[in-house]
Structures are given as structure tokens and as C-alpha cells.
Image 1 (cartoon, rainbow, N blue to C red):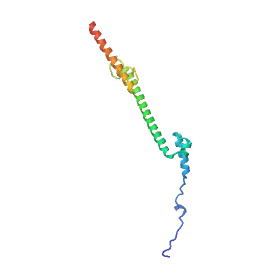
Image 2 (image 1 turned 135 degrees about the vertical axis):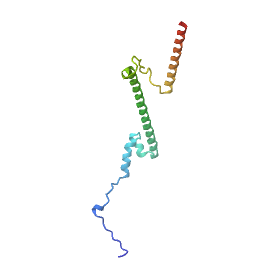
Image 3 (image 1 turned 90 degrees about the horizontal axis):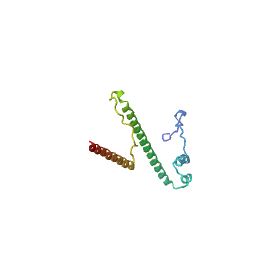
Image 4 (image 1 turned 60 degrees about the vertical axis):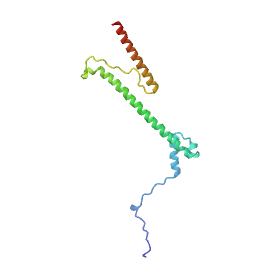
Length: 145
């Protein structure tokens, strides 16, 4: 009996929990819904070239990242506009907080913030025109004076 091994069945408390076996088809079914939600047609998912799925996924990642960045930029701009508006109001009532009485408020922005290159160019042109007008007014005062 020295070489014989005896196998003893484990007690019920010692049994390992039975794992639920997941079939590969079930996983594919779950993934199908996800891939369809990001634009993969049903037939292409099931019958098309599976290597194309990575491009759909990469496109979805890029789109999601871009949307997050755009939302972040929009939130930042909204905060900047609110800050500017609040600063304008505070400048008007600054005397109540210990500032100079009768100080002139800055007023709210005349134009939206320049973001694109075209908007920045237009803002530079407006500023240049204001500078020219200011300089011309100074010249008129010097002629009259």
C-alpha cells in the first residue's frame, strides 16, 4: 500500500466555488452591441474582416478624446466670460469694498474672445484701427491747441 494513493473527496465546505463558464459567443454578443454603438454595421461585425474593428475603435477613441477636449475648452471659456462679467460688476461697486468712490467701470467685453487665427487677425486689425483713431484725435487736439 506504500505506492497506492488514496483520493479523498473534499468536504462540502472545502469545495471550490464553481465558476460560471462564459462562452465565447456570449462575449462576442456583448461586444457586438458596443461596436454597433460606435458605428460598426451588424453585418460587418459578424461577417466582415475582424481586423477593421480596431480602426473603428481607434476612431471612437479619437472622437471621444476630441469631444472631451472641446467640452473642456468650452467650460474654460464660459468661466472666463463669467469672470469678466463678474469683474465688470465688481469694478462698478468697488467703492463699497474699499475702492475709490466714483471709479469708472471697465464694462463688459465689446467682442468675443479671439480663438481662431481669423478671429485673432480681425482683433489685431480692430486694435490697430483704434490706435490710429486715438493717434489722429491727438493730432487734432494739438492742431486746435
